Length: 75
Image (tube, rainbow, N blue to C red; front, side):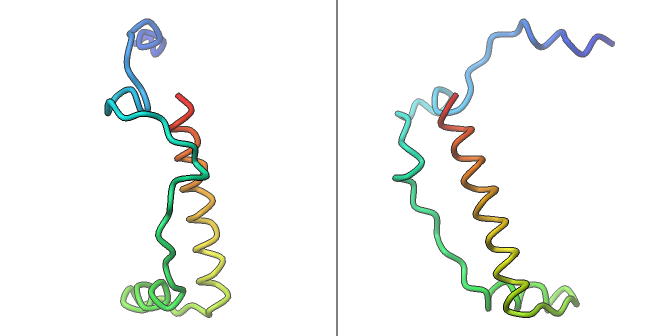
């Protein structure tokens, strides 16, 4: 099957899809999660984390969230 067939299909993306006006990413507030919350969630799954490891996980999650929001609102 030709994987390029979707390139010709017009589609709405990002904010157009929802009908919302674009907002600068700097104005989007992302709820801060406490490292203790991450530690507890991992502990329930049988994984022990240090506070430093939890901070690193949160940093990665915030980075991915910011990149996703920038991509979504730039379309």
